[in-house]
Length: 83
Image (cartoon, rainbow, N blue to C red; front, side, top):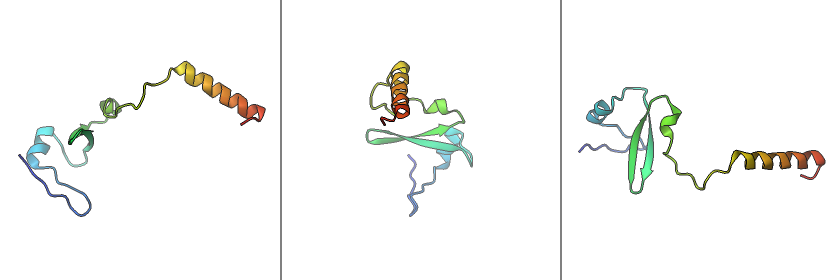
């Protein structure tokens, strides 16, 4: 088990054995995912698709057609001077 101390600026040093195990080097990017009482550190390797699933959706997404129809109505309302 490795430990690290938080600095005044909220920074921590990732222990060498963990950096080596993850193949981390200076300049690499990481992100943090909260899972209940745990925080998981993940390596960001240049592909935004790796972030998929890291944020839970608050509700099911609407269909594209519903969004398109609502947009058309809003634009029509603005053109007509109603909104």
